[in-house]
Length: 312
Ligand code: GLN
Image (cartoon, rainbow, N blue to C red; front, top):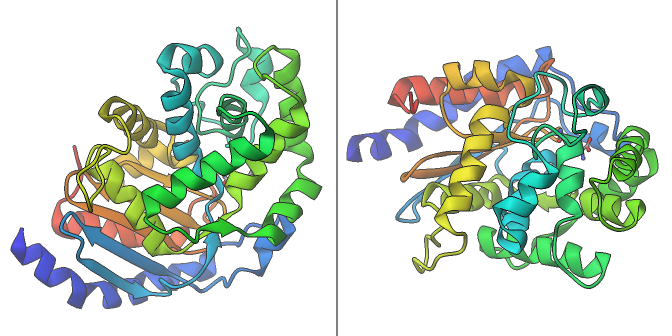
């Protein structure tokens, strides 16, 4: 409602400051060494409505890497490149209940394909489905797609985070070789991993995430031109995965407390939306035990409760 739009700008700063207090109970991710440099007390939000009005508060100018948030968009690009049948031959549609980097069910549950495209194993499988004549061309297509969706032509990799992950990714590397042996990956394992590390290291602000989220909120239409950037069906698939798997193994709790499609990353980013109405980007590098931004989730609970945003 008009009333809501009018209230958000004056309320947002105080809600950011009251949510920020939770940061001290969280931890910044350090298994990718470069990520440990992020400011633990930071919290920022940017919100864009369907008419293009922007609102932001807190540390919304902080640059951070997309990490797992990028998995939503590689899934969409893989669907656009290959169609549903090919994609769902290689990844399933079910949440795991395990950590995002778990390999447990890969060996345990036949036919040995990742449970869904938003866990690491699933996203690595999706990386091998991106079209292109070379690994570099495939990565460029992903980056370019995100430049279009974010309406930001200067979106680029954080090469320090990219190198830091690539040098330390023993678990993802072992997972990828396991997938290769199961016949899930096309191409050379190291090439597929390179595509994955690159899209995880794309550097963004909350405004970039909000703009990408707004495209999903508008069922794939460009907020500026109304042009179809993503077929509606693929947005529907992506949003469904965001509800069931987007916040890792805290997705059920998040669906109850917030009730919006969302995707988080280990850098502390959260991309979420109010369908038809807002695209939202959040950053708060201090993570809770499930790996989600501790203050970011608190802020979203406040917003969703105040404005009755839950889809349920
Ligand atoms: N690049 C990260 C990894 O593979 C992404 C994980 C995440 O954001 N949860 O570990």
